[in-house]
Image (cartoon, rainbow, N blue to C red; front, side, top):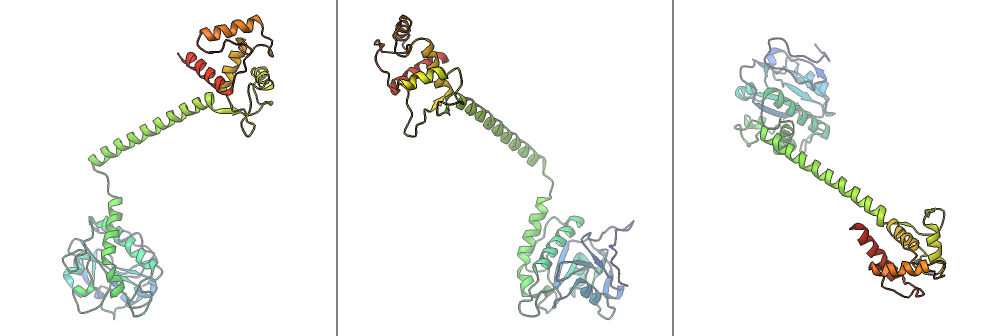
Length: 330
């Protein structure tokens, strides 16, 4: 009588059983209402009024002397068993009309008496099973109305009983909400939703592309004006070393409080151009070339100092560098 084989949908059957079952022990026909004649539109969870394994629950409802059954049983550890195939109507809720439309589920408690709580494992298995039942039977959503008009019903709606116990019954609104959220997640998008999603996806990609371009521009700009060299050492480009040595040794170029020269590529290039133009002379030997260079720089509006012997301050050098950059960018 006992079998762990998972029952598959038979050819010609209009209803299938849940693939979530891990144990099967079918009840005799005498424990059921017989063949189901109505479309499955409801789910009715019950509680077992005891802490039981799935094997114990299935054994109870498959016993011919029980006179009652359930489609599925959930043990305290969350394992799910099959007792009555969905194509048949389990005798569970003391009401043929409800049971003929409902899949009934017996859930083990995790305490005897009190609020008749159920374990998290059993509760989560119940949610998974309800979602599966709804999907396979085309139930769009569960509605708990507190009476038999909804499609999430309880034993107490049809008989004088506390079933499914205070704890589980208090969870019915949450069960409906959670199951419906799960069903909505798996619901295919409409044409309008797909269009909106594609539009949003395109906008996000455009923002990503713009951000990538901005990062590239920032990196390019940093390469030009960002501080790359702090000291006169092997890292300083060879083409700039003579100029920086000259300016540093003659105290034209000095470091900050930490001794850093704070040299960027563009600033370095500007200093070298000025030096090659003779603006800094040759270690203070004011040659004709240097004087001509100073004159030319003044005529171009790069410098405003006609005295070749005058020491140039750091602020003045920054102003000269800015003017050169402006001219180079035009």
